[in-house]
Length: 175
Image 1: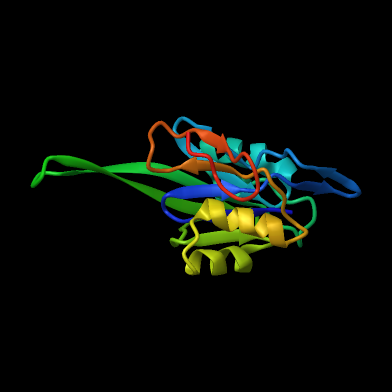
Image 2 (image 1 turned 90 degrees about the vertical axis):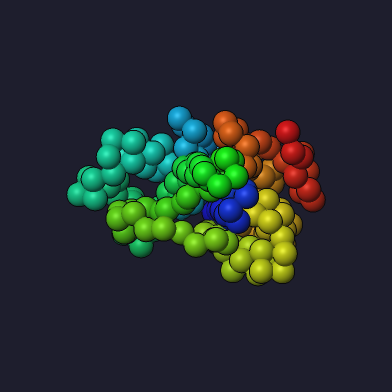
């Protein structure tokens, strides 16, 4: 089970993995490769194959299949886009995100804010009420049974991108 939230400044994910009767509270669902952020929800065993598929060109005809057709694995991809303003000679960072999934392997843009996974409605409500993505995932972990801390997150306004881990379930720790 998973919750991933994206608010433009942060992308965050919980750390719960459930596999039958097995529960792991240290699952990694967010990673940075070549300054591109990858986050996944769905079948955790497909996280690395989905990244490898994406980095190899994301050919829709070769997308890794889910183990059962009714299960979907989504891969969110956030890449930095830097824009230069001639008028004031400044650079502005705008992270751009899109999503691919085992049941829809074609890239589509994700809106801001965005949440995916078992607590997505809860996280979207938290962000609509003013929480950022990290806070939304923390709140989902505290109020649901299908997500658990620690929360891993990336500050999308700090280059290079680095995965950080929250120290508790109530607030993030900025590095």
